[in-house]
Length: 186
Image 1 (cartoon, rainbow, N blue to C red):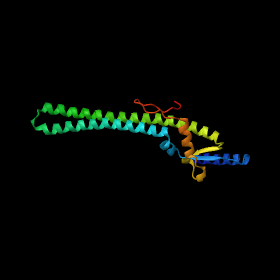
Image 2: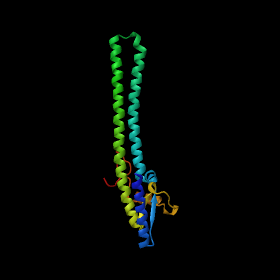
Image 3: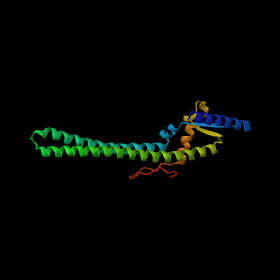
Image 4: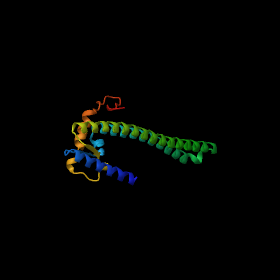
């Protein structure tokens, strides 16, 4: 992994040096992808969608946990006055509800992972499209993510320009009852 990263960096430096030798007007832009996610309209909408989904799933899980706690409390309180058969039935109910809870947790994790992967994929495609458009408009030689850059001068930071272009290219539909997905490549 380090070797590949080293080779990638060497090629990047070579390409930038070659481009500089060919043309004295090399333009390099660096952006913070996390800031684009947090500050773009689509990123905020997607984040809200994920938060709402997580809250909805968490509420269902908490409801099931309370149901189990209530059943356990009832069993504890009435255990002395119940028949052995009734105690076993109630214990089985508790066990079955715990199994349901485990399944709910597992399903919730899977659902959130699927939704996150879907949203990240859509956002990534929109981001690449936006970077390409900004790069062509701004006559950039290369645009890099700050995640792979060790250092860049503040003047190379194009994050705000990228956010503005992103918002221009990918409008968020106004919320009107049903959940709507932001426009962009599917």
